[in-house]
Image (cartoon, rainbow, N blue to C red; front, side):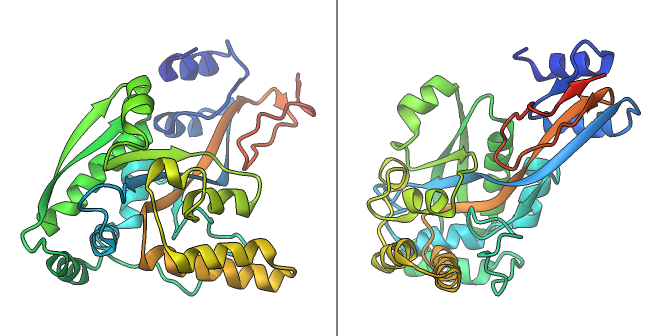
Length: 282
């Protein structure tokens, strides 16, 4: 069933027993239905605003940091996810043992952002095109929110919605500014290294980010022998990712499933797996 409305209707009538990855706009509808259970779990799945360092103005770290400082992360969660997610520093989610709780998620710092843009040679802002993929509603809404949050910096954003096949072939890894997103990975190394290390597989096809200190920290994490060493390295990683960001990672998403009450033994997975091994339908 490709249409989310059709899936929701089928669950409500009992035509289907379970809907995996429930559309966010359907959650309130089912929370009021006594025959349906809505099951939500936090994940490290994230949407992001990509700033490609191979293109101006994002070859300047001051511009990238100014854009990040303009973002109201809690507001982004509400606007893009209808509240079904958590603000974060990077793809490491709050609640993870290596999450850096010493860094507070505060309000946008527009004063510092304007100063950074002026230092980078953009005292009057600039014009940008932000590409969003059609059919990925959270990323489309994140793009719209990003446009509004950049207005106080006089950064003028034109949104271009692109069909998914064209987005993959012509935008991802090629455009300067676009909304993208990635599912949870099974380990913290596979969640971070490919995106932030200068030789990382996703880095070299997304935002072309280069930071020697970041490379050192991620390499050290791979060589760490204790949990304490790992925690120190990944907390430093988060500090660096905010000081010199390759993009905006405002939140991690919840994974939400819904099922009829005659379904027993189902539990949502933070890896977004559909595990039916212990599930029965009565």
